Length: 346
Image 1 (cartoon, rainbow, N blue to C red):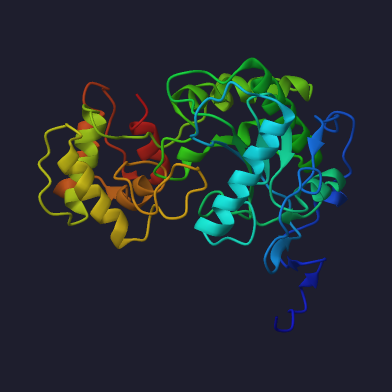
Image 2 (cartoon, rainbow, N blue to C red):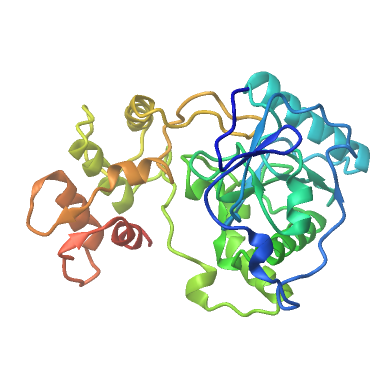
C-alpha cells in the first residue's frame, strides 16, 4: 500500500479518509441516545478477515438504506441459522462480487438476530463517529448505513420479530449518528431494483414514524412518506410508463413506441440504455444478477429526467404533458429533478 495522504489514517486494516466532520463531536443528548439491540459482531459469528484496506471516513452517515436479501423466507430462525446467513452473504460478496468484505454494515435475520456485516461497523457506531465505506448501493456507500433483512418481501410482510429489531436498530443508528428518521430509504430509491420488496418498501413510512417515536420525536405526514422515484417494470402500464417512453426517445434510445405499456421489448431497450451507462452492477442481494435488469428506478430515472424548460418542445416536454394530464396545474417554467419526482408521484 502506498503512503497515505495528510488527511488519511490507517486504523487496523482500514483507511481513514478525509472530508466531513466527526460525529463524535456532536454532543449527543438523551433525546437522541438510546440503547440499541444486541448485535453479534463479526468476530462473534466467525467472519473471514477482510481483504486489504477498508476505507473509513471522518464524516457521519446521513441516511439508512433498507435492503432485503431476496432469499427464501426461511422457517428456521435460530442463532445458528443467522450465523450461516451472515457467512453465506460474506462468501457471496467476497468470492462472487470480489469485494474485500461483506457489503452491508448490518444484517437482521428472520429470527430477529442482528449481526454486524462489514468489519468495525459496530465499533464506530458505538462511539458515534466515523463510517466504514460499504458496498451496498452505488453512490450511497460513504453517506448511508446499509441494513440487509433476511428474506423476500415482495408479496409478504417481514415477520414481527424482524420488524421489531429493524426498528430498534434504525433508532439506535439514528441516535448515535444523529440521522433523521426521515432519512430512512429503500434500496430502490437509488438503484434500479425491486429491493427491499414491495411490502417492506411500502412499510417504510411506518418505519420512519416508529423510529421517530422511539427517539421521542413526531414526524409530519409529508416527511414520513417523502417523494421518491417510482419503480417501473414489466407488466406496468399507464401515464408514468408513457412518460418514461418519451424520455427514452428523448435520450436517443431506438425502437421505443410510446404506448404506455411496459413490455419485455421495452425492458430490453432499457437494459441496453443502462448497460451503456454502467448501471445495475454489483448489487448486494444474494439472487441479483451481474448486470442491468431493465427496471426503471432510482438509478435510471435521474439519467432520463433532465431539466425541461416550458415551450422547448420535443419528447421530454411530451413526457411532462403526459404527467400533467388531469391535474389542472400549469406547466412549470423549468421541470427540475425534484419536480419530476412530484409529477411521477400518483
